[in-house]
Length: 51
Ligand SMILES: [Zn+2]
Image (cartoon, rainbow, N blue to C red; front, top):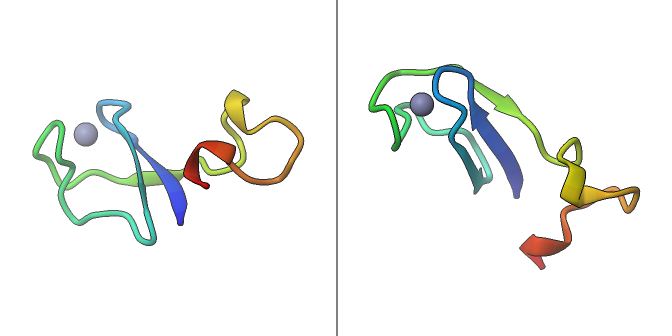
């Protein structure tokens, strides 16, 4: 699982792959992989919220 952030509206979601269409802004957005880059991830290399 990875964390994806919509480049258009900033919506974030956890999924194996980014969706074709953003659930938030209903656009075909570009999604950025933000897994392990978010502050909550800390230095552990993974997001503990997902476990
Ligand atoms: Zn969006």
